[in-house]
Length: 139
Length: 174
Image 1: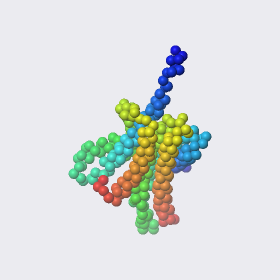
Image 2: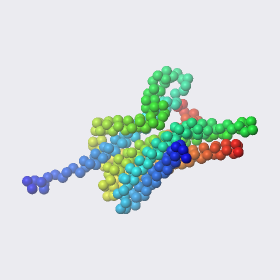
Image 3: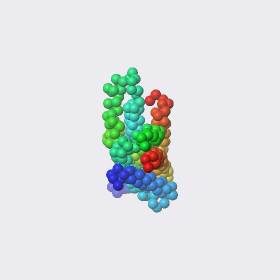
Image 4: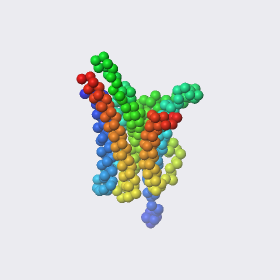
């Protein structure tokens, strides 16, 4: 018995790493949800021209939809939306098990991708608002 | 000092604490000494501080900025001096570009920091030994700090513009 225990395979120490990577990946997923909801929500809400052909679509569908997510552009609504999205993203990421095969190398690559994603978002936001003010583009 | 002023001070003060904590974390990771083990704790404290800054800033925005400062910055202020209306010009771009970018960047920054905190906490035991993870964490902390620096700079532009308009109005009235 003692001999068997001595020769037993080592406990898989990667398990903790994989779990941590899954948590990190869930958090990343959350960020991308927030990115899209915030950005698209703003675009839909602000930028469909008042007298456009799309007015019925805007009034009856897009604006109510955008309001669900950003609750009349109110900061409390944004915080509540953010919290709900965090939960949804976490549950989806866990259920899908998409990150089960995550290893350290992939996870590190994701980490650097996150750094780049943040700066791309910041730059896009800045450019978007410049264009919005000076009407460089239709939205 | 009223609640509006207090919320503004809280917004700035807790924002600066957030920035300083992530800067300290970055330097500790860079040097990788005996204090590196406290980096995850700094991250958590920084996240909480950032959250306080966001909530107090949001309160200030809703109660005062949106109704009093924003219209002045966007359209300027009309002041009646000796029966003559004098227009003090605003700076629309300051709100429409700088403030809007600041708002949206801040919301994502905290979501980003949330991921950074989870990551750093999950790897707290190997942070000092695993060089690859330490370097990645260093970049994540640097981004968290630079995000703050960018927001802080934008805050200076906004408050500077508001002050400039207020001073111009004061000069006309006095």
